[in-house]
Image (cartoon, rainbow, N blue to C red; front, side, top):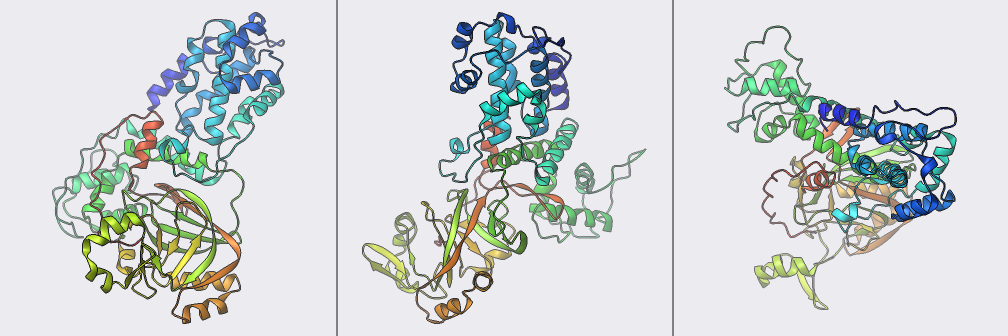
Length: 513
């Protein structure tokens, strides 16, 4: 939300705290915070409370009004700060502003409080509305009881603030969102045109625009006083700034201004507003309890894996995730065993669309046979699962695995699979896990057989597959392309409006899962 729009909105809401309460906390208040609890009858309130959440809330109160001048003023002030969470205050208070009858205003304020609390505690948008296969547990606090307690204790603002994620990453993303919102109105740069790769020391007519983009992103200091002369050549200071930008956007920090770097340079403050808003919302979808100290987190947008062991990062490595059209779902699932020398039963969709048209010779070359009306690829280093599968328990047949297509790990864009997650140096990762779980000898023996062999882990290791296009790493906010278009879906659901979508990349010619 633009700063000017927010300021106008807050004025509309009646000053966010300039209310006429008094010690008895009765009728009063200004603007949307104006209430008349003395004129709210139980019958009128029952008629106005059409939402099931309101019924539960008021039943617990014995159908007594909740809002006096002081409490309603605190609520409006708290919701007025929704923009710091990339939420629109008006989305919560519009109905209360329209309500004129005392009972209708009373019910509308309660609904605003519960809806805002729900947005902070669980997210404004239900992720399953966007993706039916979303399967990561969400928070489920008892908001009606919490709101009642907060009102009775006069602690409404603190209660609402405490519902949002409290971790450092969320705070940094929120701060970056506020800064991008402040800049978005003034960031009117012309887009940098495509062209030949710019190498250090070379001249290029696009260099002034590149320098302007680096300044707008904070990679170069802003020009002071008179406008600095246009850069004639691609010099060391600009090269260093480009390398920093490349690291933040998941590109090889070569310093070369190639096509992917131009795309990153063309990300404006307005673009970052949408990206950060979507990623703040995704953090609100996650439970607030501490994640298991030993776990595996895969960021499918960044195509990276982080292995946590006893609360510390034990390993980071690249992965290959689903290509657009075969997206890796967001889910939480336990890893329960290692499979040495796995076979691969080809899913029917891949069989019919991508394998059968290639003929019997293709099956023979790739060690595929027919078993029980299925095509099965036999064990071996050329198997599409490689030499190890990390088996997980879920209803979507999603798992981690090795791959013979090692070259894909060196690419910046690593979205090529049919939905499963391919792990760089998967054998090394399997040995790391097997050793730490005390089954290394079993694993080595299983691998040596050359046949499909299962090694059960003594305990399950939770795995989360999450889609984060903005995240904090090594103290810096990193950005990744919206490979699946899910940022745009979520931004529109949050009310940020549609905008043209980028063309979807061509389907990768890779039959692996």
